[in-house]
Length: 51
Image (cartoon, rainbow, N blue to C red; front, side, top):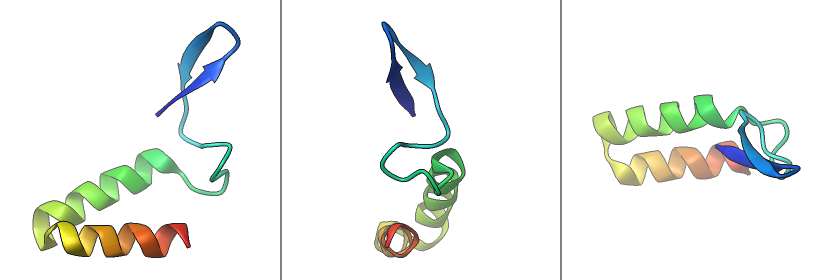
């Protein structure tokens, strides 16, 4: 994920909206779940992680 920092964008693992969530790790985990168990399971997992 990229975040605006001054005049440009920088790569960031954390978001200002979800500062406690490592987004890089979460995206990798959700993509792996989607590949193995389907997109429905991946979306349920993502929803649970963010709530």
